[in-house]
Image (tube, rainbow, N blue to C red):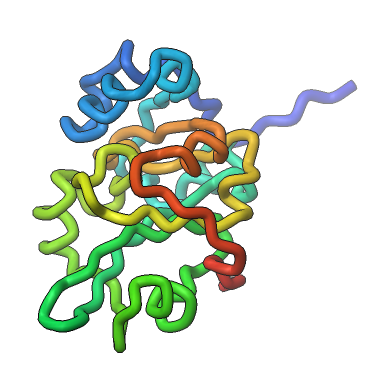
Length: 186
């Protein structure tokens, strides 16, 4: 029997609240506000910030693309009011921003929140934005495929770590709404 070598890194997952240094402040606050049983299901793993993007993480680690979920912040205006939402889709998909997201937010045009606005409004780093800990009142649109994941690997609010939690828990976050067809294959 021959041994195979791989360049993949096996991530070490620990309870997220045991490593608040690996989380953005809003994420820590949100996890502390969850029921203890829910918070205990959220794990964190330290990563190289250079592999924070989904494709790089999958290539560099033992995380499979099928368990990754991406969070994008989307905004649109209606009657002078800005409507912001997070859209959670599988790592292999793109959010249907100009279809389902636009209709759900009831706006004429929806677009990704500009980089600086997303960082400032969320209190999180670009490339690490997660639905855990977003501002109160924001809608969190979760693709049904993400909600069904036994383990969803998502951002932690910072680029140097990732969270892992059941998709069903993402679907129970404050402001969460599960939508069929939110994600479209890339």
